[in-house]
Length: 299
Image 1 (cartoon, rainbow, N blue to C red):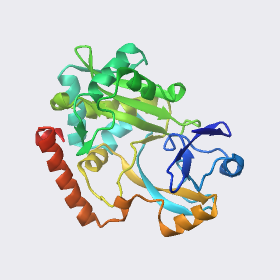
Image 2: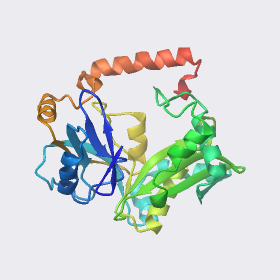
Image 3: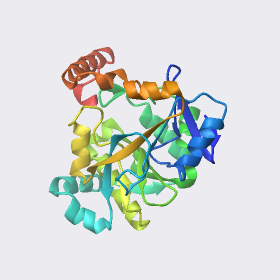
Image 4: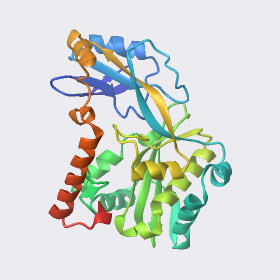
């Protein structure tokens, strides 16, 4: 990690060293050219620098090489407009289900109680969404440290059952206040019947509307070549739309330029046919189910 133009820059990779703003789905360079010039002079080998263009502009604004990325974006005017016009009956019913079952939603302070609640949620199950959950098994202090990033621009929303945290969202608001990104959104699997995640999304919409933030971003809409999934269906039911947005890749070395032209900046899995990747996902899911003795609904 290095600091350039007041921004923290993360550098990843050994074979191909790629730099990006730390949290580049929530942080954007005010002056990309100035950042690029500083990276060239920083004394650290960096082959590629990548960054996303900030919403609401989706037409390329810079002359750097681009590839199209995507986001799940919910345009927000008022909470009432979202509730009555942007979602259907099923989403409204799910969002009301938590309240009917006694779940309390509120914005939460970042304190010891919140950190402990997050730690309990993270350590409930080693597998989520058919993948090993990266935060499972982390210590309380590790969870505190990772949850404390961007505190000045973050809003925590908690779902509580008899005072116990059973789900939360961490919203990170960009410097201009034009978008809020869901950096974390997760609920207890054992509380799934109370639909806390649906209620958390509804509360996040209200929080953005109250702050006059026009865009709520729920990470990507589609991942790799996987066009459909239960997660993308959930996002769509709650009013999120796929928005394709430029991601720029700027070569800083001759090797970076060659690697970009060869597509070496992508993961190996991204280059495989979707039919093969789907089979590998099924095998992985079956293996996790057997290894951890999980029920299918827990994956």
